[in-house]
Length: 285
Image 1 (tube, rainbow, N blue to C red):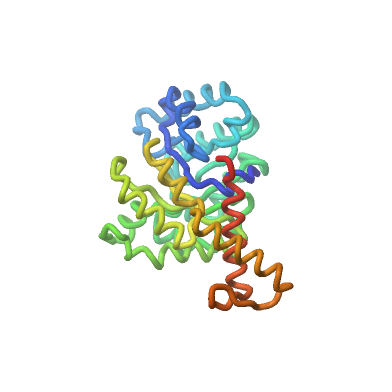
Image 2 (tube, rainbow, N blue to C red):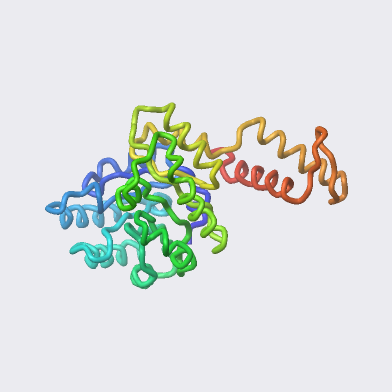
């Protein structure tokens, strides 16, 4: 499965029926692009959108295909089975991953995994209370690379009316972070920020996501990509601190030591090493 998606920060949605936007999305600076067969496509257009996607995908090079995901329609909808057939074809041609919308059942992930084969990753999208309840089980299914959070759908399902800071969702997000950690997955991907021109709010949202243990964020407009990418890369001050911790640890021979008047032990070292790893993953990006 594509390791680059494990470190991806920005996942940019683009409608399946707009092939002229697919290459533009790939050139937007987004780490990954999600071609959407679900919410972005009206029911009457599902068939033509799927056909358009399969044709357009065949025209992309392998490097582009390795950064592409497809969000398929949920199990139980009239389009799910045909989506799986299309994903089987695209997976054989190098599709990186499938985003499974409304993920709630282990059986659904098993069916998708069987259709696409072991080289194609799965990203279950948790969008309901039932999906949250199943987070631990879903996270250990074969081929699952990361969990993703569809927080707007989740709010609707749970009957929540969140404020701008979404403090009501703190415990929900923590469940996904902990489930990912237990399963040894990459950090989960947080939901969208709907205000495409509200850069200040997007920056706050993305910073909250990173503080809360998420490793990336869904985007709905190319203008959001740069802000999200920047939010998930350690800043200069963070990086300098992590370098100093690592150097001091090496000089101390691996024991507990003091830096700037504060004790540094294994958990602090782990945080510093994680910071350095995040920076290294996106060096030159």
